[in-house]
Image (cartoon, rainbow over all chains, first blue to last red; front, side, top):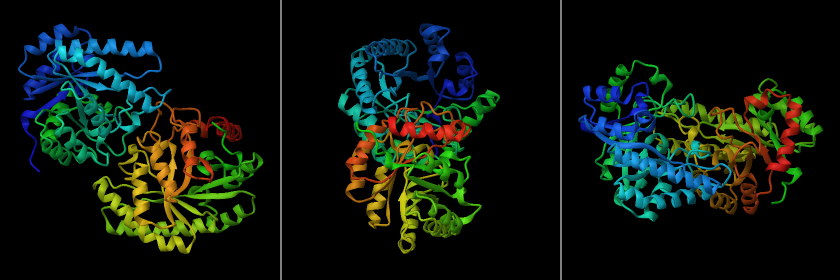
Amino acid sequence: MQSPDPQKLCIHTITTKGWSLEEALDQYLAHGVKGISVWQNAIEEMGAKKAGELLASYDIEVVSYVRGGFFPSSSKEKREEALAHNRQMIEDAAAIGAPLLVLVCGAEPQQSLEESRAQIEAGIEQLLPFAREHKVKLGIEPLHPMYADTRSAINTLKQGNDIAERLEDEYVGVVVDVYHLWWEENLKAEILRAGQKDNLLAYHICDWKYPPEDMLNDRGLMGDGCIPLAKIRSWVEEAGFTGFHEVEVFSHRYWAMDQEAYLKKIIDAYHTKS
Amino acid sequence: MQSPDPQKLCIHTITTKGWSLEEALDQYLAHGVKGISVWQNAIEEMGAKKAGELLASYDIEVVSYVRGGFFPSSSKEKREEALAHNRQMIEDAAAIGAPLLVLVCGAEPQQSLEESRAQIEAGIEQLLPFAREHKVKLGIEPLHPMYADTRSAINTLKQGNDIAERLEDEYVGVVVDVYHLWWEENLKAEILRAGQKDNLLAYHICDWKYPPEDMLNDRGLMGDGCIPLAKIRSWVEEAGFTGFHEVEVFSHRYWAMDQEAYLKKIIDAYHTKS
């Protein structure tokens, strides 16, 4: 298996949560990282406009803005609020120069997953004209079934592909995150399907420790766990994807490390274990 | 939706872990519970023969013995050891009068899920003559994908059905546990499929708290969470299943309660929330 392209490494700001956006930019650049995906919390204080100026002053590509979504609710009013919030997120994505807004689609435990999925699809559909106007694509990120209660009713790439294909719009597609999808039975076929339909918008990497100590913040770095990363990357490449490989790790353990030492570890893991 | 049949309530000994087998039998019987599923730890000290005599002295049905499985390993020797252990579990199931051994099929994080699945299928196939001889059926219990690392490579009812149908033997079938499967996209169709092929051997209930505090021991009692229990039960009934509804709850919170008060709570939840 070939090593991944060194030019394709992107890091999510949440991965090095202790750093301000400016610190992250300085460090990523100093260590040769070519792409950054920006989480909302990283620009909250300065606002999207100032963050956009800051990002533009660095020689680094803004890969995505994270994260919109959370469409379902049994309350119509809350669904409208979610749409308004997503419009704001699209504006902010445009302001920071991100071509993609990642969607964690949401789930409402008081209603069926089918109902939540229908509300997700309706929500995305309503946002599409606004997304097109701002040149920001919407990336449906299926989440692991362990998050089907409150975080997302889209729990397989198949479900993400189904919605993206029904909406059939260049401004909507899917995000493949290995943490959420590594167990899916027909993952290769679904990745190829996403590629064939031009719906494969982003590729997120990390690892699944066995077992994780908690359900949210114990992700592993590539090589720490059991995800067949090189194999999944080969499928993503076979699907025609040429974008960045985005390292997105939530980890109490790694957040507690010296962040520059951690960044070196990330870069090494990217080159040798992904 | 009709209430569930009061005669169909079965409780897993692990649910009231603090009780010895004898205490559990006394209490279940005193409160009108008609079925018991016995976990290995509950009979470890007295052994299967004595446990069988004890169980036979009570007017209660032994529904299943829990749990065999854990077939996959990258080591052939360990796979052989697993088979030997499963033969012992089948003998013990027969000794306690259980017509079913529940299989948590296992997974080996050092190899692909496909490989683990093939080893699971081969393992079950090898056990079938022995199972038939002892009149103990083998129930493939698909586990939630969050356990795909080390506990089971069978993570959907579809996968369980696929294996059961390929093996096509009255001594193998599937176990539907709502905790593991509630999120599955085509769950109704897969339950009906299991029924049509005479593969639906057991039905386990509890609830999914949102979110669980940990990945193992924070299951909810029926009504505590977001699983559409009455709906899933209606599918199981539509599939022709007439067996027990087995309450299987691992919960630090409930284990810490007075166990008789908890038993009353279980019975009430069974009648009103399942």
